Length: 430
Image 1 (tube, rainbow, N blue to C red):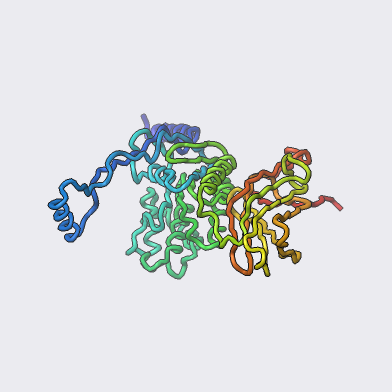
Image 2: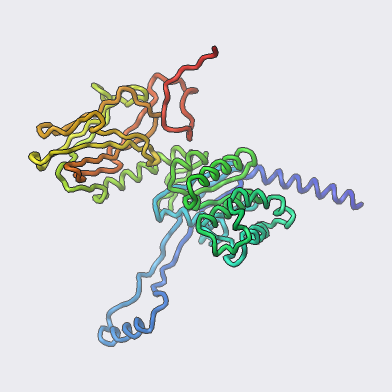
């Protein structure tokens, strides 16, 4: 076969292979288990601890200094896939197995059973400074990190100025990385992963290290990567608002098991329900000296037990018990309304219109004539103050749902990630 024909055949073969890869998911996880064995052995001991243990064994031979043995399943039969250009947000409580999944995908640790397939180059931001060398300068670390991703020097040079500018380290780029703050290291790591040849970006909470301005830049860049460049992202975060904005897929883990796999909005709602249940069981969620204690909270439509509907009337009704009625010179009740991501979106207070708590009445109602909130899941924080001291404080209580009702057409509904408010407005073409 002539050389030119061989090149043509190779080119066609590579094109077919590339197209075949694009048809398959960028990330495919199949029945992964991760088991850690508890050996019963302790870590390194000092000479004093070793001598002390020897003495204890002489006088108490039956005493055991070992830790429990057995196995711990960090992940149990986890399966999911992420198509090219999609973004998956992974949520769950601490210890649910989120970081373990990312470490398996990044090749840091192997699964005990099952397999994870990555189709393309993956850049991971699991910890600040991961993949960098502290003695190398910022510029040298860019080339070092790029070489780990299989890039040639000329390819890195093409993106070098853009990486430095995005990270905002221009005056420090030739300084050793060990002199960088954690925020500077994170900015450089994200900039490298976002601008170099990575098909898949794996991120674990590190964006929370940066300042607000850089987080905003990261959000814009992540949206651009998915929309324009077709990159795949897998993100672990406790920030539901960020995940709702960036991710179109969601994975909810609970004690190493897939609790739900679907849209990010569905996973956010189910995660909030789990957090609500744990908050209700947590007695530490209440604080204050007890001068006043809330006994009941109800959110409802006036004169109706039906659904609360956006842009219609709503009442927040609080019943409380006063312990020291003769000592209420000053008092107030504040209410914070939180969205399903746990963010405060509205605040109400009895002192706004000069209302103080009447010692003879042990209930108060806040009337909202028109709810300017989009349909979704919400809850309340209730803060009560008496004589400038905290009397009662309830967090994430009384979950309620706002629905669209009959006043909205399906195509008028607010898309995910477009804010919490429903503005009343008119549109005209003068």
